[in-house]
Image (tube, rainbow, N blue to C red):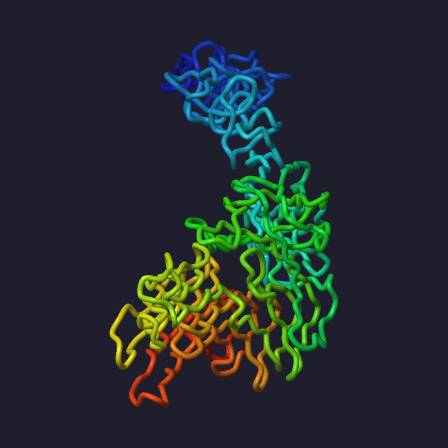
Length: 621
C-alpha cells in the first residue's frame, strides 16, 4: 500500500521514500506529515502547498492577490519587493515593505511628521499635506497650502514674487538721454521669466529670467522736462503678480530742454536772465512760496535759481527749483526748498539779500566773436549772475560777468584833515554788505579801505584788494607818508562751489576801486569755447592807488567740454598803478592791492582745455 518494498517487506510510508504514499498529495509532499508541495504539484487543500494556495488539485504559483502570505511577502499579499507595500501595523522585513516607509520591530509603522520619510499625505520629506508642517522653497507640493511661501508652481514650492526695491540710475538724471529703472524682485526660480511694466507718468517694460532677481527698463528722457514723475511698477511671473506704487522719478536735467528756443545772435552785452529779490525776512527750509518784489518776468514751469547774496550767515547758499504757480508777487514752487534763506535788508553795511533768477532753457546757444552775454550788475538787490541751460553752447565771443559782482565804495577825500570822517576811502562790498570808511578789510572778505589823504595833502595810501578764492593783497607804499594802508580781503567760499559767491570789491583810496567778479552757471550737453572766445568772472582793476576786486565764480557742467587754454577765467584784478607828483619829485601815492582769484568748477565726462585758476573737476561718469 505504501508502494515501497525493502528486503521483502512493505515499508511504512515516509516523506523521503520517493513514492507518493500515505497521506501525501504528491511525491513526498503534502498531507499532514510531509512538507508542503511546490507550485504546480498535487494538493488536496491549501495546507498541502508551499504557496498556501490549492486550486483544482494543484498548488498555485504565489501572486499578490491570492489572499495568502506566500513567496517573499512579509504579510498577506504585501511586502517582499514584488507585491505592494504593506499597510500600517502589518508585517515587514525592511522599510521598503511598508507603505509608510518605516519598519520597526517587524511591523509597518503609522506615518508621522518626524520619521524622516516622505509618507502618508506628505508632499515631501516630513512636510506638506493636511497634518505636517508646510514645505520650504524647492520642496515638492500639490497645492499652495503645502508651501511656507504659499506658492506652489509646477509641483514645487517657490518664493512669492515680491518687489523689494526700485532704483533709477542715474538717481537724478542730468546728462543722459535715458535712465535705467531697475526692479529688484524676490522669487528667483530657475527657468521662469519675470516681466515688469511701468504705468502712471512713465511708460516702459522689460523682462528677465527670474533667477537674475531683477528687471531693467530704459526710459527715454528725450521728451521729459525737469520735474517729478510719479509711476507704478507691476511684475508678473506665471500666475503670480506683484505691484509697487508711490514711486517718483526726479528729473533735474543738466542740459536745457529747449523751451526758450535757440539763441544764435545775442548781440553785445545781452542780459538773458530775469531777476527779482525776495521780500520775506526769512524763507525757511521746507517752504514752497517766495514773495518777491516783481514776479512779472516769471511763468509756470520756469526754472529758477534761488541764491542768498548777502548776510552774516547763509550767504552763498543756493538751489534750483521749478515754478508751480505765479500769483501777484508770489512764486509757488513745485517742491519745497531744502535750505533756509534770509532777505529783506538791502544795500546797507549789514545787508540780508536773497534773489530769484529765472534760468532760461535754450536749445542751441551760439555767441559770435563780437557778441556777449552778461549779467545785470549787482545793485545790492539783484544782479551779478548769468545762469542758463542749453543743448549746445558755442562761445566765440564772451560770457562776461567781470566787475559785475560786489561793488566798490566811495573814494576818500584827499583834502580832508586828519580827523575827518571821510579821510578814508570805503571798504569794498563783500558778503556782509557795503563797506564803511575805514582801512580794515570788510567782514569775511571785502577789500580794505585806505587812508584818504595825508592830513590834507594829496598823498593817499593804497587800497586793499578784495578776496574770494584767495585773499587779496593789501595796499602799500606811499613814498613820503607811512600810514594806514588798506588791508586785504580774506578768502571765503568752497572749492566745489557747493556755495556760490561773487568776488569782493577792492578798497578805495582817492580813486575808484575795482568791483568783484560775478557768477556764471551753465549746464549743457556740450560746451565749446572757440578761438578768442572766453567765459570770465574777473575782478576789476582799481584806479590809481585803489584796490582791485576779486574774481567771482564759474560753474560749467556738460558731458563734453572744450574750453581752450585759460579761456575760462576768474582772475583777481591786478595791482593798480601809483600817481607821482610832477611838482615834487619822488612824491608818489601808494599802490592799490591786487584782488584774489575766484573759483571755478567744471563737471564733464570729456574735458579738453584748462582754466585760470585751476578748476575743481567732477567726472559725470
